[in-house]
Amino acid sequence: MRYAIVSDIHSNLVAFQAVLDHMRGAGPVEEIWCLGDLVGYGPAPDECIQLLRSHPHVCIAGNHDWAAIGRVDVSDFNPDAAAAIRWTSRHLSAESRAYLESLRLTEVTGEFTLAHGTPRNPIWEYLLSEKAGRVSFDHFQTRFCLIGHSHVPLLCHLDERGRVSLLGIPQDRPFRLKEGRWILNPGSVGQPRDGDPRASYVIYEAETDEFQNFRVTYDIEATQRAMQTLALPRRLVERLSYGW
Ligand code: ZN
Picture 1 (cartoon, rainbow, N blue to C red):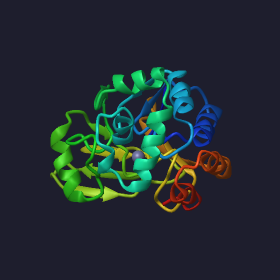
Picture 2 (picture 1 turned 60 degrees about the horizontal axis):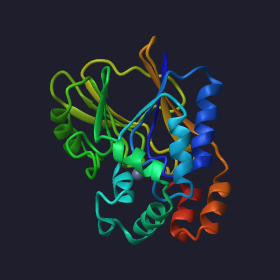
Picture 3 (picture 1 turned 30 degrees about the vertical axis):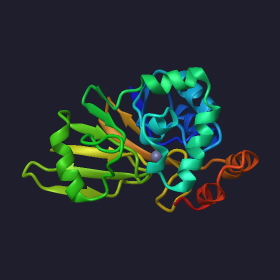
């Protein structure tokens, strides 16, 4: 059975649709595991929520999801992000709002814990250092934790001697995560920030216990045009071209 691990879709419907087409092109997907930030930044919040909900899935809340429903203050965001959140908040349907309100901060499915930022602080903390990784392993019980938030694909490993290391995620080939415990960030579907503008996601194949990270080309300009039409901040439009 194949599971798709996606994060930080950020209302980018064109990118999300391209990822769904790509994953289904390789065979059926049992469930989508979505690591938060469905909305914010991009032009199509309701459509992204509806599309996710039309598939079997597990989803948790991210900081942008909570900001859009008023659970965290927009003053905690930079001005461009805050402007996009205010726009999102004004345009969300009642149904989308109720869906975002229903999301929990963490979920456990089999051997996987899902948390947006880190399992210690799912809403705000970034895991970008070995120090943050070391602390995180004390805050979940399963072998694997799946996170998003930084928009950068990443692995963090706790080996059997208690050593923690950060690793790049192998590209375009399957890999296994053996021995010890692991934290995996699949990168971002809707606003990648590792210098590669293509949408990023991970497939987990339960039968072979293999993971694979894919980068998917999508029509970036279509999303940018939609953002311009809605007068979303220019910097948010431009960054999609560069993947930062
Ligand atoms: Zn995000």
